[in-house]
Image (tube, rainbow, N blue to C red; front, side, top):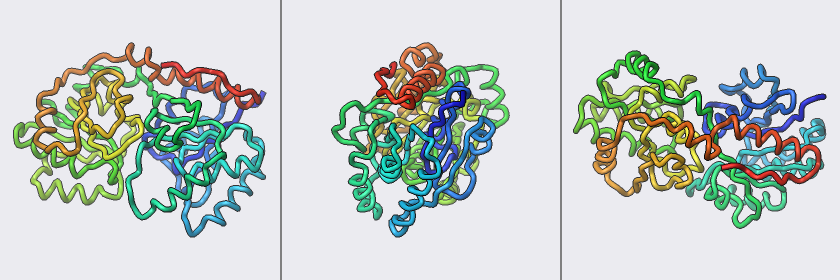
Length: 374
């Protein structure tokens, strides 16, 4: 039998939070039963594209979603679904823009149309009117609602019944603490005797690197043997490099770029710092807890993220000095959280089985009555 092909709708399959979550599930699935194909909105290849194709997935490309290009984009969607009429399940991860894709899927007769919320806010900017328009367009187009947290679901869908919270699970075994690996990583980074603070995230406004670096400045003033590891790329990276240089922190801050060895890098950290302006339920914080790290995070992040009791929530209105004090007072001992995370449904091995069953049930035409564990 041919596998059921599920269309995952994303922007681009780079190493972001939701993309990593999708790959975590995809790797664990039986590909004789389920295959993921991807509808992406960039012409360039993403970091995960090679792996997707190795696993048997297909990548379809659409143009950027731009207000001045809506009509052409909508025609392109109709053409896509008329040519790819075999999809029974479409799972869209592009927040309010999911309505556009799912409307075309609805017209094409796709029986299972999932909108999945991964954020709890987007702030106010020049794109707000178009986002509001997109939300109106979403009404009645999805017939299944997923979210990474209750807060994220309420933000995008409002008061909709039967929102399924699908945990942003990770491979717990991969992140489990390893003392020898920790020593190796710290030796390679030349930080064996330092307090190592880590952050992983794209250099954009949401991740709040401005405050992050200000906090580290205060940490470094009190403990000169401290290092900040910044993993990621993005539009604001050059600006942050200039800020680090201006503050005289160049020797204490390491810009590591995009890494494929996140689980190993986390072994070398002592504390994880995450002062985001807004999030849904960040995969990277689940990974940090799987690695046993103490995490100092902004209180804009839902408390649902605190799977292990190792998150210390701080207000963004709190001074960098107080954030720094929380870091300096934190335990740097990695804790074994594997059992706790598995029991709460944050391990991909368990959750991939649930999601496989869900897709099969929906593709076969009967509404799923499966309950999410955790």
